Image 1 (cartoon, helix red, strand yellow):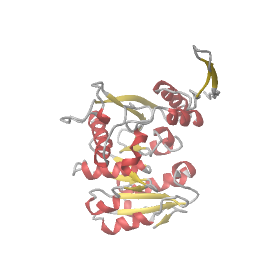
Image 2 (cartoon, helix red, strand yellow):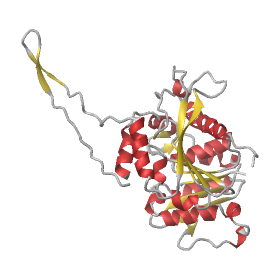
Image 3 (spheres, one colour):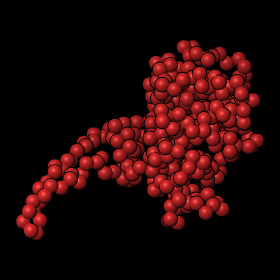
Image 4 (tube, helix red, strand yellow):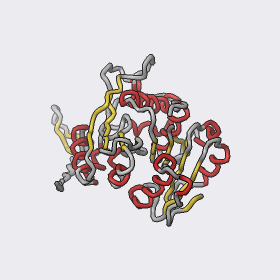
Length: 321
C-alpha cells in the first residue's frame, strides 16, 4: 500500500563575485565603440560542485547514507520523445540519497519542491530515518540530477516528463511499496504520479547557491505547470475524486498556500484524507519547525508504524483542519 504526504568536518567556503564593466574597444578603423558587459550573470557552477556541496551539507547529518546516480535511460520506454525532447541518446540520472535504517522499516521517498533539491530536507533526515528507510531524490532537471535542455511544449508533456522519470527511477530502484512525501511542487508531482501510476500494489548557503546557479532545466517547467499568480493550470482539486491512496496535507500556519484548498479537495475524495497545520512554520515548514513537521508525518503514518493506530493521540500543539 502506498501513501502520499503532501507538503503541503565543517567547511568554510568563499564566494567571489566578479563583474565586468562596459569596455571601450578600438576597431581596425581607429574608431571607438562601447561593448555590453559579457559577464552579467550568476557565477558558473557544475554538477560536480553541486555534489561536492551536497556532501558537505550531508556531513551535518548523523545518519549514515549512500549517494548514487540512478540511471533512468534516455527517455520513457516506447516513447519517441526523449527526456526534454533531447536529441542525445545519453542516459539520464537521478541523484539519490538513501539513509541507513532498520531492516523492517517502511520506505519513504522524499520529493523536493520547485527550484529546490533533496538537501533542503537536511533538518529532517535524522528524525525520519529512525522510523523509515528514507530515500531522497533530486528530480530530473534539478540538484545533482541530469539537467537536459528543457523543450517541453505543453502542460501534458511537462507533467508526463516528471511522472515518467519518477516511474523509471522507481523501477530502477525496484520499489513496490513506499510512502511518497512531497513538498510544494513535489507534492503536486507526487499526486499526479499517484493518479497515473499507482495501482493496487501494496553549509547550507553554499549548497543552495550551487543548486540555484546551475543550468536551468527543471525550473523551466514553470510556465506549463502554473499560470500567472502561481495557480496550477491543472489543479489537483479537479481530480480529487480520482485519488487512489490515503493522503495527508501538511501546512505551516504562515504558509502562503491556503489549507482551505485541501479542505475543498477532501470533499470530493473517496479515500481517507487528513489536513494537519503546524505552528511556527511557513511554506518551508520542514525547515522552520522540524519537530512539529516530524510529529505531523509520524501521525500521518501511524497506520503503518503503529500496531494500534487508533490509540495514537493527535500531536500536541498541532491543529487538525
